[in-house]
Length: 202
Length: 245
Image (cartoon, rainbow over all chains, first blue to last red; front, top):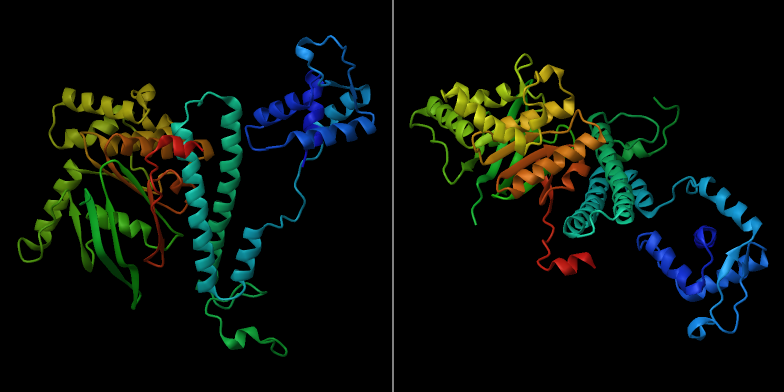
């Protein structure tokens, strides 16, 4: 996860100490990422070791005896923060997620089972998105841009899964209409025969 | 609790070249005032048949439909003609339908299209136009009331069709694939409008192949091969604070 780079970006705006970094990080990412202060400090130590940040010396007469040390970026830190923003952000391919794995494994067994699996996941996804929409309607901070973008990010990804499940349903139905489809496409009414390797193939 | 629109035990069979095709198999559903109900399923699952049964364009082989608590006359009393008359009346007064092909009259303006059903009933022009204006405003289409519909974008035409379905205070709205021709933003807009119609107290039933659209609905029914395979009735959280956290 990109906590390290997130902290660099926040420090690029202005020097901050550990706790400030934690709150700013959580606020700016709309609550999608929760981090603890300990994690912030270990990350800062590593960034300092790599020469990307440096602590600002605090004088003894800091107000209220505040002895927390703010950090600032070095020149290298500024470069890295800028580069990271536009660097490749694609998730690792292929997408190995649990939903996909479950449906793929089910799709190659029995069509009815596959539909049951897809229905179950569609049910869950619909419920989740529905809840988000309801929450969104009730929220008073409808004008909060970060919150809005956050909700969009979450729902659009869930909707993508939903769309994929619709496609799965369509393709399974199409496969069921023409049982003699080739190349591992699930046969509609799988017979024992169709699953056994046959010599010469037709 | 009885619904404004109630379908129970609906079964429809068609003759498909000598073979009997069961388009709907014992489907029951209820839509109440203030509700947006979505029926989702792949093509061929029976969705359009369901809409046609709900507005009386197809008579089911089994099962009953009730509109605002009353049912069409059974066989014997006036027979087919009596039933057709009953349904025509229901569509005029209570049921608005948004068809997949919007069926707008291209050469007429948006407001004339929306007022058309009322004019055909013999309502005076000024009253029909006043009602049309109101319906267009509710469908967020007031801005192009005077434009010819063939000059409007698909999304705008969709909103005109939506206004025509509700004009004159019809309480039940049926939508058949309402977003088939729309892009993502247009789709969201129509979904939001349909859910607003429901919030305003109408009973809205939409059928769609797109599950994403169903996320706007209060209840979801999943149809496959003519049968209901799943129902989703998300709990409305009574405590708003609980929904936030």
